[in-house]
Image 1 (tube, rainbow, N blue to C red):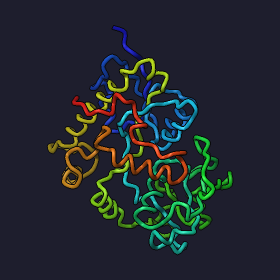
Image 2 (image 1 turned 180 degrees about the vertical axis):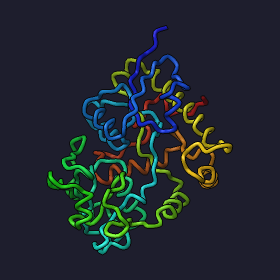
Image 3 (image 1 turned 90 degrees about the horizontal axis):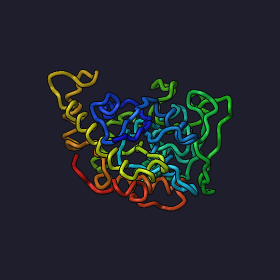
Image 4 (image 1 turned 90 degrees about the vertical axis):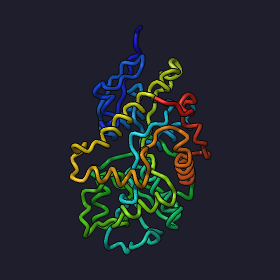
Amino acid sequence: MTKLNLNFACWGYDRMQPLADGRVKPDGIDLNFHDLEVEETFFRQARFREFDASEMSLSSYTVSLFREQPPFVAIPVWPSRFFRHSCVYVNAKSGIKTPKDLIGKRIGTPEFQMTAPVWIRGILDEHYGVPVDSVTYHTGGEEEPGRIEKQKLDLPANIKVSAIPDDKTLAQMLATGEIDALHTARMPSTFDGKKVVRLFPEYMAEEKGYYKKTGMFPIMHTVVIRRDIYEKNRWVAQTLMKAFLKAQHLTYEMQRQTAAHAAMLPWHNAHVEETRALMGNDYWPYGFEANRATLETFLKYHHQCGLSKRLLKPEELFAPETLESFKI
């Protein structure tokens, strides 16, 4: 039987290694795994559709659904999840001591449509009283000048967004006070704990409190299949879903090993035990139903800041074959 050749681009996360090294092989598929950093994958896939399937920003994917011919369909797998309280940086001289001090300030963000800032804006609005439209957003390269949005945006008038000068970076502008704060996915090079500080210095406690209150572990990235591939081979969505679940299962098993550390962290086992005590054994759940509430919240935030033309239902994001729970 001839197998379907699929080029798949994703960063080499531990939960993806069994697919990258061939321990897990999707039935009927020869998977060519391209281990690329996330920014490169997102740019090449969003702009040029270079890969048959790939990791993709959940926000970028959601924006793409409003095109006349949406280019991708997703499956409920999350290469990246991340609590983002740690990712709000402020200029120490800006007068920002509490979240509400952000109101009226100049906020940098590499791209307005990035998933991390969508979550940050929504959480600050819902849980800290900082309305999404109460600040001015400034977009551009964080460490290198010239970054632009991957997809064209059509935002409502109450959302104020402008690009920074082509020869400047957000990291440097934060240090000099040209912007007051930064919502980002990566720690800026100018973060020193003195001139540039975190809004939430004790961010782990803040994030654990958020999880205890909401039960949500924010989703950053999903897995997309090019729609032309999917329409010709509808079986691919569920087959890939099963393979990702198998790879994740192997990763969970590795994390539970106590004879040696699975990661280069001295107290790795303690971190795993603490996480399981707080979030359960399946602390990084794949699948639709287990993540419905988190997806509903993300879509609410996405619509709130003008990135979605209407409020989508979570079911609209994914291939219907992957909405049901199934065992591997």
